[in-house]
Image 1 (cartoon, rainbow, N blue to C red):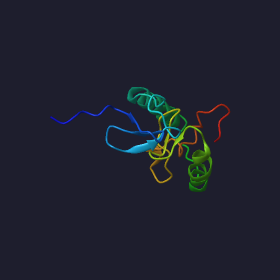
Image 2: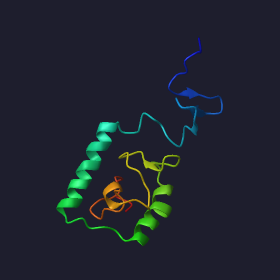
Image 3: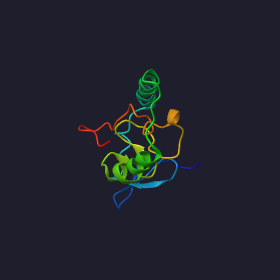
Image 4: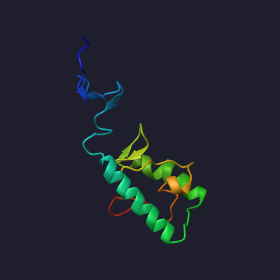
Length: 117
């Protein structure tokens, strides 16, 4: 019978191996810090509600590109492999519909205090 692997095996190099076999640096991401699925969904739906009630204002493509390529990757809460904000759990991508992307929604801002964008 094959031996079951733990959810996160810490490797001698200070890296971790996830349950799917992927290896990531402990400093890049800690699974315990990522909000749970239901919390992420709650944050997302509140953002969509604010956006719709404000009349669906959108950021320009240039501003979204600047945020996703310059601001977010430098942040300590940015998980590079999944392009996700560890603080709120949202995906950080430039080329998505505004309904699926909080960065495109002009009513939303960075979860850091003070906000970066």
